Image 1 (cartoon, rainbow, N blue to C red):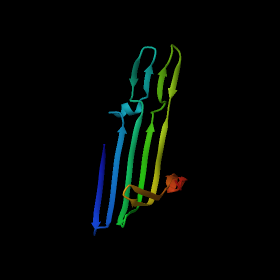
Image 2: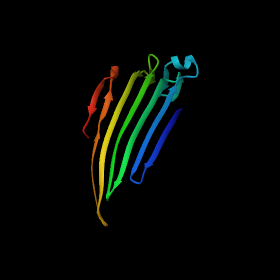
Image 3: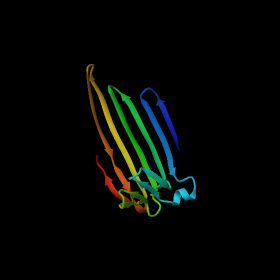
Image 4: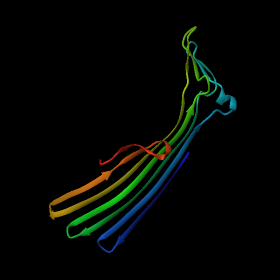
Length: 171
């Protein structure tokens, strides 16, 4: 299950200034476990020679996703110009743990052939994305409008110890 919350505010100041702000939070979790301890602990057995399945559920998953975002923008209307500027921030996080019970999945692929499949994942991935922009829309004549602007965006992937593991900036 999950929850989503968002807020938005808009304020007009006089005839020529518009201020907008928004904030949002999304959180969801996914948990996949056996109905009993035996269902969690027993490996999954798949017999490809006769098509039968038995044993436990085969894997356990605990995962949570979270997204936080916010932005602030201002628009100024002046003598044929519409000036816009703003900043924003977004943070995304996935925390997951997934494993198969030992010895993993047991796959019978032939009369005397067996394979096992085992995996374990325990990680947290996070990215932070700040942005900033400025833009001018100039109405030169009735049928001529010129737009110019600058935008900066960075993406920072966060690793262990809350340190930046990789960054992509100046996009």
